[in-house]
Length: 343
Image 1 (cartoon, rainbow, N blue to C red):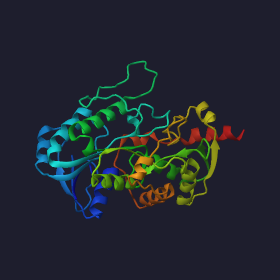
Image 2 (spheres, rainbow, N blue to C red):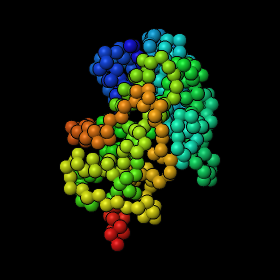
Image 3 (tube, rainbow, N blue to C red):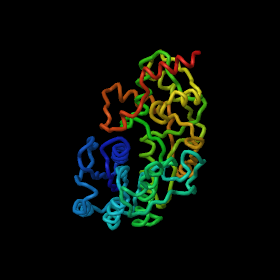
């Protein structure tokens, strides 16, 4: 197999490129060269995928059996559309990493691949879907952008040659968002440790390396389609995650479980101050049986925790990203909630 990875130097993109190299595939990566480093053995093409001349130069490097696109998370659908149009004549298939945010019912509904996808035209710019001032409804901006990008891929490659992967939360070595690293560092600090909700609360993070394996399997397959790339419903729990963090770090942290209402009363920001905690009914009810039937295998979350701690302890540094600073509750606020929990 000969593949092109758009991105390829950090977290999921690097996992895709490295996994393909481990399989003996020929790998080209295309990026601006601003973040991370390419895996040894990959051919690097520098350029900006929003520049028509760079896209034309990239297309001249083909052909490829497949493209795996991991770098369009903050790109307008119209820029994705320009890229897929340039690459369609020189690529057999296109695997696009989207998100469960593309579903209209995400956060509140049980979701399958047949659930309604948000509106979002394939030629939309970055202003499409922005919220009007004073809006107090769902924030669908990011989902609409990703839904438009999905339509751009299918518009150019057709349904049979397009694969749309919809992960939820991706964790693992190299994570740049800071969710799992924050929990690990907090567990390593020890002491009484605030834990959100209940220990049996289902969660569905997936390891970046498992997404990479599945993406490459679909790149080599002869079918298109959309797949939810999440761990099976009910297999992993918040209690299992935090216990694994305590065990992996070898600290003396004692988990203190705080009810949702107490956390909300103290103004804890969902999803960020206590990473992965959210009270919405459907946030961790995403069906992935179609992906599992197509070969998705999710390693135990405890393995992801151990490997991420080993990466951090070994001097691993994520690519700098502003989202890292969003995560984690301050020690003072945690102490106040722990004190209230003891009353």
